[in-house]
Image 1 (tube, rainbow, N blue to C red):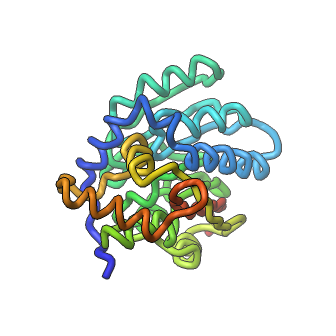
Image 2 (cartoon, rainbow, N blue to C red):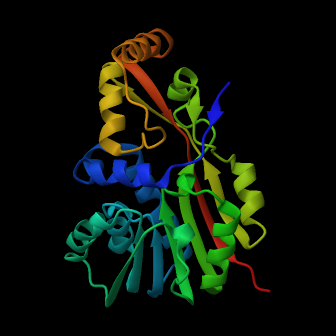
Length: 262
């Protein structure tokens, strides 16, 4: 039976900090999600700049780059658990004219002070790491201006199911129906859709390298013993082989929401 575990935010921070330099070139799915999310936002914002934008989980700046390529933003607030990601964001900003930039370090769920009257709150491949999604939606509702947008991508129930089936541990992903229900308390749903993407790797060892290089293994502190490693590799090859080696499923969800007028 799959064990749903409480997220260790400090471990998540450590894992993503270690992979700042490798994340961009290895997070293939997250990169495609950033492109799709930014295009979805710009379809809703046909003209004119965003005055005030908050990004939750800005990381190495992948979504920031995609969004600023397509949209004009006057004031950009970027939040991330990893304070060391700030130089990555400054590098992105060298190519784009933003009048004001503010970095908010730390866990978004523990921040008492956040910018208000926001036009847009955006987040790519991050919300699955939050403890209380309902509270997050409520907080963003309170900090958005009337009619402001909350647009995000995250992962749903089939994400990395192959690994979870062997390790018997995984994140507590929300189904798209659960996301719509939680968000619908505060927002009108403009778009909410899901898809599955399957990546193929030459071997289970190559797959594990991919996981380590993207930092998404921030679930447990336990170390890999030789016997556990050998068991995982053998089981993965036995259960999830394909023509080119082995495969791994990603299950992205994309949502664009508008703050309800109350």
